[in-house]
Image (cartoon, rainbow, N blue to C red; front, side):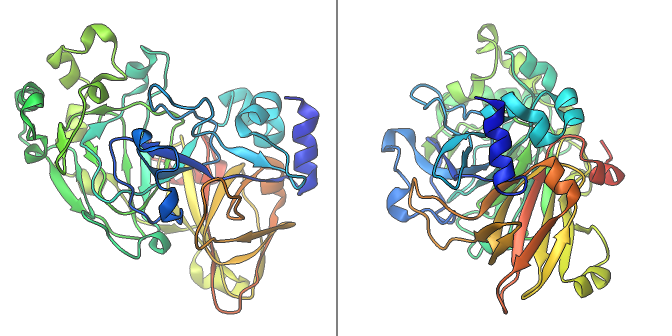
Length: 404
């Protein structure tokens, strides 16, 4: 696309872009029905594609859903006031410096962030995501990821609000290999080797590549590296059989039946870490003490931090207040509660969304707008305006909290 189109779109709303909802189905899961999507639209893409259980934010990453996946599935579209639209990916490719800042574009060559809500009735199969070295063999990126459980989307827990993570200390590679040997015998027993943690709304986790995890049934906000690689290690979940193809989809063909190779995909020390929860659980941290900022009309806290690859904040603007918030990097955002104004754009949290319908709850904020500061007005006298903000690699504001 033409660079001037991006510039005109940014000029239209003071460096802020409105984004369309990007819905993604998964054939191996049952939707949890809490993403505000109309119940009749959960299978809008056809039963053969699976139910819609994910919404991707500020995405320049294609969903990897196998044969029959539309070319733009998972990608975010920018919606103009005129009704015109273009892909955020195309905008980054043609004018990334205007969106992300010239230094970031030169360093990263793109947005390099994928963020989503996922919402399931029950747990996802125990799986891992490949490291950069492993994914590079197929021309892809590795995938660390983080979780945060927004209270506004978790008014009900659904069937299993626990996540199995890692492996019980003392587990051997032979134990895991035996589970792969038993793949075609129903439940292969991989969860007998793992540990389950109860999920708590308003908190989160960091999951690095190579760590087994079976995310539970809370709606999860998930900042991550822009990749969709994984390997399923669990053969059956809630009576549903996991195809072996989902174990090997991001593995070189010559290793599809090499069980020793597949076991070695795991980061063994990270999985059997006896201090797994202490090392991987993530509690919110105020950006500034709430006692200082509440008088100014807001609260802001880090909800994803510790890595230089991505970060996220939760901003709450108190009822009836107007604030100007500055950040040192471009970001995408999703509202979880309330309504008001974000710069010159009206924003609101929908109660229900039809498939294909436009909403006012998702935006992308350019680096120039973020650093200059955005005026945010909560137009409710009673309801807080709550916004989740996701940042890509190298956010200067997050460096003080970096441990990896």
